[in-house]
Length: 64
Image (cartoon, rainbow, N blue to C red; front, side):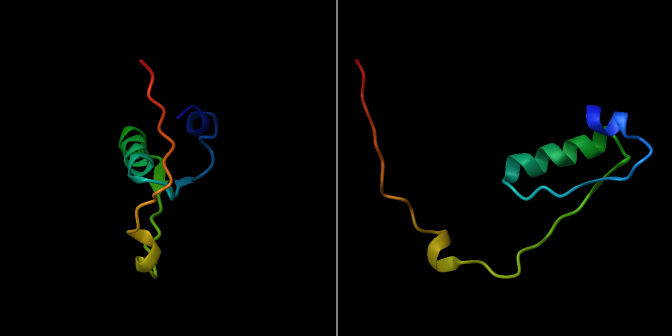
């Protein structure tokens, strides 16, 4: 938000391409400051074969 306020003569476009939390944060920021523009890129193709597989390599250490 500070960056946007310091550069108010420029267009600010945020394209959240990380996770749902960053997308929600970008949306809340644009609600707070209406000068912020959001850009959302939809997926062209999902990697269904690798997307839903759980990763099996866990390293759990228990401490008492």
